[in-house]
Image (cartoon, rainbow, N blue to C red; front, side):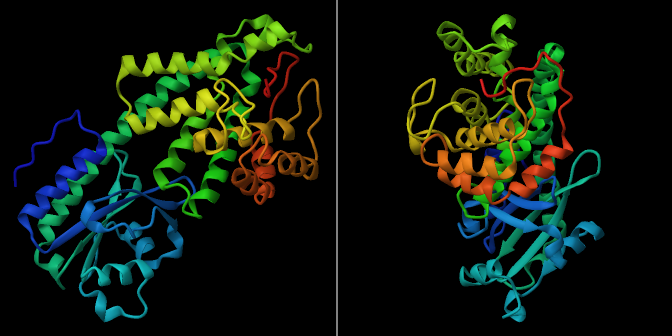
Length: 375
């Protein structure tokens, strides 16, 4: 087996090449999909080959709900279903869908990172029964190659995250008390994205990206003069205009940084830049900097907008006390369809108890030098 794949390709392009190679060698092979593990032990789809079919779920429930996948994680060994038709009608809906596509056997293999930590699962399907028993060594090798590709991608993302965290850390030398604000906004954003993902409005990759990049939303604030950024007075019109430049300033900063570095995929770059540039747009079109309206505002920005305001309302600031949960819910619902995306409001208000837990988990240690987080 000869495999020549450029390091300059994205993870999807590498996996597409791998899929084509397998198809050339084994006509009875159908395709494969890969699901990764998040911080709450939920599996979410990050890749499915063209032949695998569109019915493979973008978001998969918690791994502990599947005895097969839990066992796979514990044993560290491939799990093979030799003939799916022998398990009807007890098999899951996804397998029933695969049978209708003439997929009769299945193999699942665990994926580990460089620290030997379980991070995901590769699912492979074939048209004939007992296919994987006959070709086990080959597909064990394929799963190893896929794991290497995924680990390369994880390393790139980790390097990128380290760069961004360094930028944020340098920025926090003048504002240490807002570090937990950023953590909370990321957690609230993930809470909203998970709600939308379970309703098929976004996929697992998107959920993961929003969670990791939400804390960058206000990075442009650190390019605003200190006398404006840390002012506890009401802004003058001129100061407000300067303050409102922070989304565009952050957008330009990260765009230049990432273009210089070149280590992030286009889809992730788009999500990052959209969060930074558009988290002050309003659903009714009266926001800034571009006055986008409704679904013209990228979903990732609509999510972070609600997360950011939720945290501002729940948090203590030198100029305000935390709002009661009932008042926060009322404010968000009154702004639904005006300032906020109605679905994002629905997502956070239905999970306000979890939001309160997040608030308690990451409390602020305030000084009198706090940034106006809603600015």
